[in-house]
Image 1 (cartoon, rainbow, N blue to C red):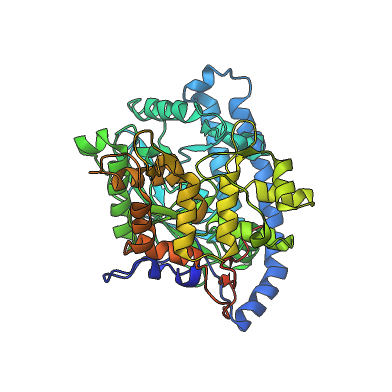
Image 2 (cartoon, one colour):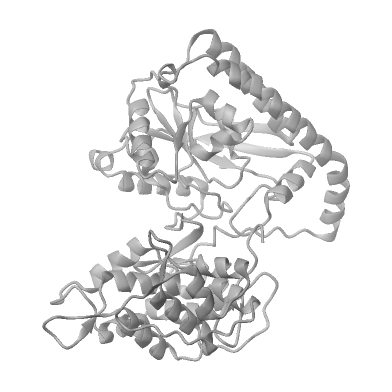
Length: 517
């Protein structure tokens, strides 16, 4: 991540050793002039016709999907559908789905290996997950059941197909939903072949296929054998990858539909039978299957994952955001003409002061409602929609860039450290430590809490002194460099190539635009 660039993270690892894995969250599509002309011509001829016909076929799928579940009660849908509904509707959806992908240019699906039966492997895990075209893997798997967001039920046609599939639905807004999903996966996986196989994309999000993201444990909780399924797109030009930073949905669809022929390779690996320890530990099980699949693909297995809406990478014992939201906050504030150094923070060390969005706007002298709402959303809010002004004060100090790293870390400690009853020194406890790392580095709070517990081991207290905190943030061989890389309070502007962040004189970083910006 040289100079904060999301496309190169090697400098975050100062120790000698094997090369660090490529960034799996970024996809850049470089076209030569001849290729641009080719895509313009083919796009004008092929893409509109292909996309139009594909949408017609997509809507033709709806009657078959509706017919399979029409008239059935919720209780009946808790069991696998059989009889004429299964025969007619399943074959209809399978055939039309193959036609849909054929029309989009996927003329060949090459299958290697042999798919295991539902008794041999109740669960299928597919990787790498790199594009919204990946559901094509459902076809050689004979339309297994899937896990999807409950919000997708409201999407036209897609919702009907999920009901047809008897998909396992998870809601991000319902805390009890994940527990119910785990129970349902376990029920189906241990049904003795009664239910069709369940297909998971264990990475949980799309990458650029250059490295495997960390596998989520959901597919492995039941402790049953799984069959790994590899997905490759061996085309001369990669138009399908849909990563966090790269071409958007419409561009990926248009470029892929403009290709004369796209090829997909689906490879079934041998069934992976978990050991007793793996059956008891889904995370261990997931990590071991990830390594097996990465080895077969010839790419690294990483600890990278998405937490919330941001990609997270592992540096030492800490998880950090690929691009901390502090960088985006700096862009919002400077776009509004605000200079953080001229804001009187007024935060009281060691004491929280909760403020509303209106008070936040007055304190920062912001008048545009959209800018206020956008900037306020970067801070963690409580149940009443209030934020701790200490968070705002630390963010403004970091964005100002007028302090050295030593001064900035001292300020962070003073703001969040707490007084002790029987000692004169103040200590930084887990909540304050997690808040500091979340604000400055984008670290997920659970990961920061785990690191805090490790740093406090062997000490008489469960808190860090100023000396201990600054030893970690300034002098630790790895984490110290992390703070300087992400904050850089004294770095001067420099010329940057297109697509890389620009370090500003005040220490903020202007990141490349995200999809949809």
